[in-house]
Image (cartoon, rainbow, N blue to C red; front, side, top):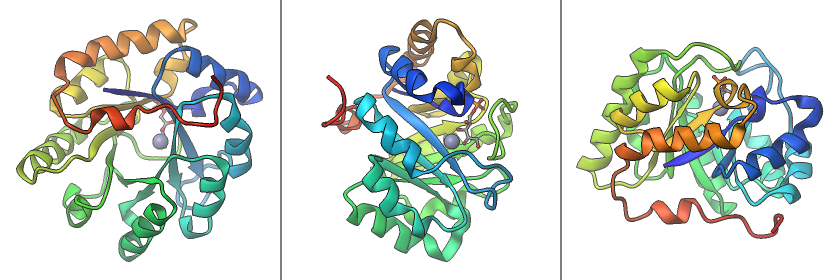
Length: 237
Ligand code: DX5
Ligand code: ZN
C-alpha cells in the first residue's frame, strides 16, 4: 500500500522544508499536482519547482498533469526528476501517443479518470498503464469533500485487474482521509493520495503511519508491489 502525500495542501512558501517533512514521515511517493489554469480552473507550479525539490529526497515523484497540453510538458518534467507521469483520459485520442511518449522517456505512466467520466473510457488502456487514478473529487483544488459515488469505479477497476491478470496500481485522489482511505482500500485501491488530511496534521509522520495501518488489512498479495517502492537514485541518502 502506497502513501502519496500531495503538497498542494502544504505551505507553498516552505515547499522544500515540507518535502523534507514528507520524506522524514516515511511516505512512499510525493504526489505533485500540476495545474495549467485551463484543464482545471487553478494554477499550481511547474517543472522548475519539481527540479529544485528533486535533490532533497528519494521519494518517488508522482506527477499528476491536470493540463490541456501535456505533450509540451513531458520532457521538462522528465528532466526535472519525475518518476511517474499521470495524464487524463479526457484527452481522448491523444491518450495513446502520450502513453507511449511517457514510456519512451523511461517513466511509469498513469491514467486519471474524472468523476463525470465513465470508468469504461479507461478500459482500452488498462494493459498499457502502471496506475489507474480514480479522481474522488473534481480536479483543481485540495480540501474538497470525497465523492463516495466513485467507489464503484474502484471496485470495477479491481475486478478488471483480477479478470485480466493485470498489475496496474489503483490510485485514489481527492478527499482521502482516514475514513475514506479505508473505504477505498476495501473497494480495491492500493495507492492513496492525500493533501489536506495529512498536511493538516502537525504530526505528519504519525498521520502517514496511521493511514498506512488502517489500509494495510486490505492489501492483497501482488507480485509487482516491491518495484513501485524502490527509492530513487540520485536523491538524498
Ligand atoms: C486535486 C488534486 C489532489 C488534491 C488532493 O485536483 O489532484 O491531488 O491535492 O487534496 P485533498 O487530499 O486535500 O483533497
Ligand atoms: Zn492529484
